[in-house]
Image 1: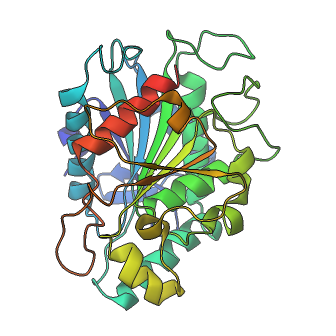
Image 2: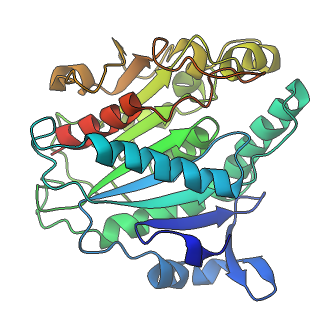
Length: 329
């Protein structure tokens, strides 16, 4: 698939197995030189003026480049299908522009394959360059989005809002990128009006079936409690997710967030259930630093070793995304 086949409202960013940014050339993909990252972003990653919301999506395990693009298109189509001004009164209009982060996530559907991709995702961010590359990507998008409000107000209804969306191991990339940019700290939460002062400031983070231990926010991503995020960290889980249950339990001796929800975290965790599109999320339900969303009644489809791990592309997920976008205004 060439970039010419990608819709205009979606931009694709490809990472190599070391986490470095790749660019297409006549002889195939090659790493973008470190001193040319800013130029590359300037040439290929300029948020259009028509966009109201900017989404950065990182896919998960067992996802081909073509499937990753299909997943993003499905999520956007689900959101478009149910968006209306009565249900989301502050999203008038809703015109998203999306950056899709792709990375080599394929393996055998086995315990060794799960461990291999888990280790790769971790190494790409910690020993490799994924966290810094995505962090700089987010910083570039943030600095070039329309944000006419002066500090301490971070955005207003005429601005462009930045949302991070991850699935499975892709959630780890986003968390590492946010953590990379979190020092010195910034208060997290919609109920704060602290100035940004960071490489970027995201308005929400939605983690769909995150492949990480339940205590990941207390042991691995500790800086997310004071990260450059205006809105909450929202993570879904389903008891039917065998990748985060059966495989994660055997690989890490404990169930994953995508199966059992967020456990311990640097701040209290709010527990709610996933709501159908016809039922609104009150602001009070989502306005917390960490929100664990039980999707066990929604994410139920799936056969084979992963179970319902990839059943996240549902109207209910789009409803949650739109609700976060609506409430961050």
